[in-house]
Image (cartoon, rainbow, N blue to C red; front, side, top):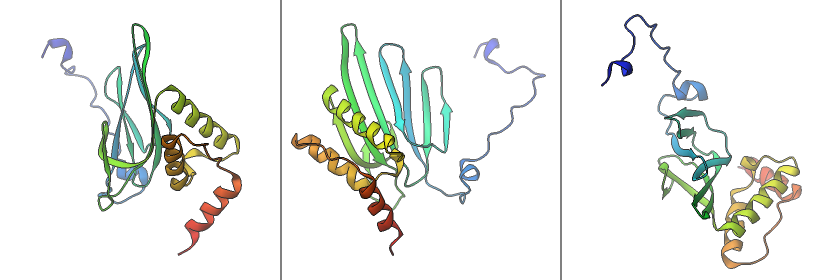
Length: 181
């Protein structure tokens, strides 16, 4: 370790960050999901399109880690390029889970999440982004959309069928169904 990396002897101690469970108003044993994010200019972007992390940690100049509570919905986009242009577009809509739920292992998501939609390629990712923009134009937050809609959208993409619209009526039905016992 170099001398420049050592903390100054007379520097004030750093204030500890509050616990994530305190931020969320939850008990101390809340299982959290960590999602890796990164940015390297003109080469690599791994970012959230939507989602509300309980906290985002800056790991270094290029990497961050977003921490989510159980049941949170999020959309992560991966874009990669080389000297000749874009080589990969990927979009995933996922829902974080509790330890008792079945989860899928996803690179960069610890311990895993329920994968609702997976789109690969420029055309598929752009089609899903258009649907997300249309949902937000209705005044509906993308994190509040029915998980069944994201699954249907993913299945329609895979089958190369027409993509369904998410309407205010469909959203009202989803919210009414959540209230029922």
